[in-house]
Image (cartoon, rainbow, N blue to C red; front, top):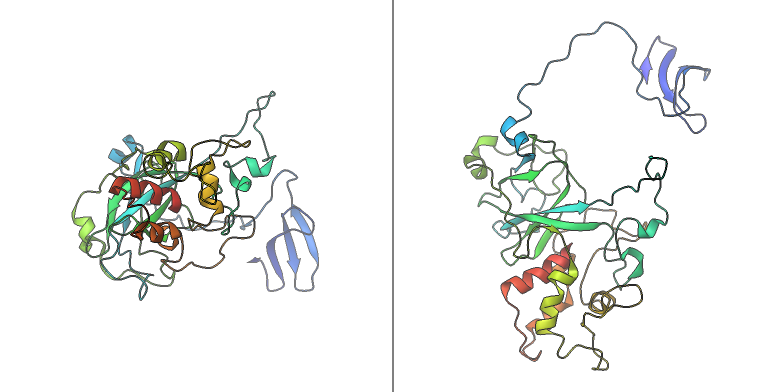
Length: 337
C-alpha cells in the first residue's frame, strides 16, 4: 500500500479473482483505477519525479558470458550446520540439475498450457512407485559434477547458465551430508554467492570475500562423475553394478529375496528399481503431493547415510560382496538424487 493522503491509500486489491489498482480510504470505500482482464496489476507507484537510481557496473563478467557460464562462491559451508556437522567432514559439493520437460507445441503453434496428466508430466515413474518413504522422485535430475570444499569451508566454482541447479554437500566417501532443497540459476556471466548451507537469513559473513581460501584461486570447473555428466540414467549407471555384483543371487529364481534383475514390468519400470524402493533398502524424501518435509531437514537425516543397503553390505556374511569406489558412488548418487 502507498499513502496518497492521510485518509487514502493506493493499493493492489483483488475483490474477486484478479488484482487491480484501487484507491481505498480509511472508511473502507474503494474506487477502481485500473484493471487488466488478462493479467494481475500489482505494486502500484505514483507517477512523479524521483531521484535516478544508481547504475550498477560490472555485474556481468564478459569472459564468462562468452562461455555461457556463471560463477558461484560459498563463504563457509558449515555456517548453518553448527553442532551437527564436524568442520572438515565436507569434502565436495555436487552440482545437480533439475531437468525440465519441454512444453508440447500444439497444432495452432501455441504451447501446452497445463500438465495433464499431471503425474506423468514431470518425470517417470513419479507416482508409479511408492515405498515405505513415499515417492522416490518427482522431477528428472542430473549431475554436472563435483567441486572441492576448502579447509575453511569455502568453495568457488563455475556452473552452466540458464540451468535449474541445486547443490549437495558430500563427505569424502560421496555420502550426502546436506541437500539444498530449493533451486538457483545464473545468467551468462553472472556471479552469485552465499554464506553457508541453510544458514539463517539474519546472519552476515564472518570474513571478507577475498580472505576465503577458495577465492585466492581461480574458480574451478566441476569434475563430471565417472559415468559422465548429464541426466542420470538408472539403467546405464546403476544396473551394470547390480548385474555384476548382485543379480547372481538376487533374481526372479530366488524366492523371498529382492529381485535386482534388469527386466521391466508392464509400466516399463526396471524390476531392480522397484525392488530397491519398495523394500525400503534405500532412504529418500517423500516427494508426494503435500507429503514433503516442510521444515529445514537436519543433515544426516536422509538419503545414503540412512539407507539400509550400506549396513547390509558391511555385514561380513553378505556373500563377500565388495563394491569399487565408482560402483558405490553410482548407487549413492542415484539414491541422493
